[in-house]
Length: 101
Image: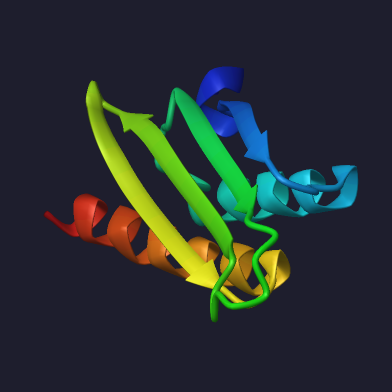
């Protein structure tokens, strides 16, 4: 099987205090959500806004290229770990709809 189909290229954009551990967690989550989809590449954006007044200052977003089309998902949460978990779920759901359709 083609290695690209198994392990899509994952690129990151980050803003705020995003750690290497959070990037690694996001990469694992995205790869797990897209497992078996044939995604060629994924752009992941992780952002933390340093504003204590915001209820959900952490954002995780992914845009995957599947068969020449884009599959998008995003999530905001109080912590980046929560946002990444929500992103994984939403991306997996969208990917499953694509496979079924």
